[in-house]
Image 1 (tube, rainbow, N blue to C red):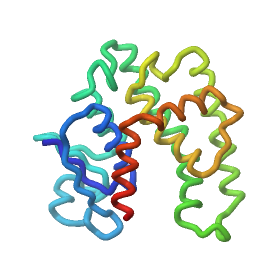
Image 2: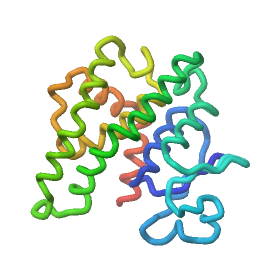
Image 3: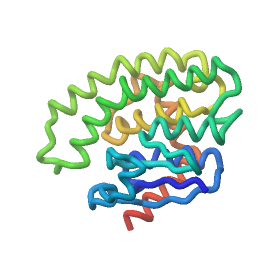
Length: 208
């Protein structure tokens, strides 16, 4: 049994999305990092860094959400989330690394301002600077999506999923994607997938 540890209202959400995409039977244990669930000796034996999410699949135990998604795609999504050809697989790796290094940092900077601060306490200069920092990455995505529907070709892959999770940080904080119409269309299609909506329902249930 595949088990994912971590509340959906965290980076665990992207791993839940991957699991929902491949259709594997899994168990979700919504451990809460902020309440110390990840500080137990049992959890630290799996992830000494004491952070979520963590995926356990038999003898395999993984942390780092993007690495978890690459594993899920390779183990359970061959020919779908994980392309059959070497070039497609390399593109999935490329866009995952691009997401982590280029897109997520400015998106996360903005998200911190919106999630952890009251509207009157948000630092608009920080929000704006992060938005400016994101623009070159959006230019890269826009150029790529001029010639294909998804980042690794004509079908949705784990490369799209991982990148979409980072772009969603921008859209959630009101960033205007209209100057990048291909990217705006792409993220809309990604976030309208059945598996993404399934995770949204899990989040809503946690929040209730």
